[in-house]
Image (cartoon, rainbow, N blue to C red; front, side, top):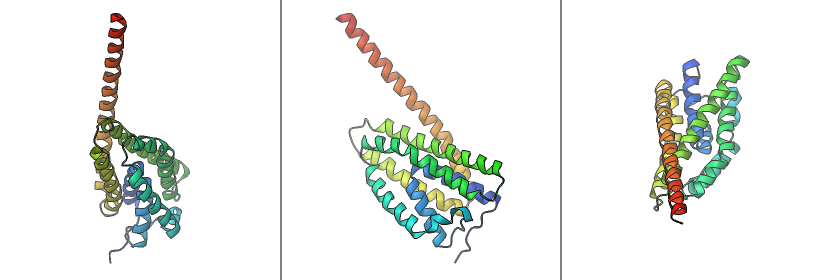
Length: 208
């Protein structure tokens, strides 16, 4: 059996970066995976996160993950679901970062908390932007594929960060850069859509 990963400086940063991003995608998968990895002896959670290894927390996370697994794959409804989860994913990521860094100075703990929430917000924003881009598609396959990919990525990032924390951080950095590109593309597409609609309305008024 492999020794559990002990959270030194590099390992802690890698885990927090990966966990924050994963929480922005699927917070229930993130919390459940952390708890299960701790029980499997793969990860030694900091004292401030021992609650996550409780079977009650793991059970609740798995149940909510199952609910989200189906809700997040329904076109249009997934946009409402994701909008509501802005108030779940970001705060939970911040709380996890806060609990994981309880041994640090208050200034560093605050910085880690803000960084955790910001990374989760970026991941959540990228997820929402991607859904907004594919929701107009008449077939549900795009939504289902995206949702499955997000679920798998969230779980993979947590596990991978326990094995290769630096590489996990680099992967998240690449994903954050991709999210910036996607969000800019979606914003530009929406602007073009509204401008086209305004031109059509203006043309109709002129003809009328």
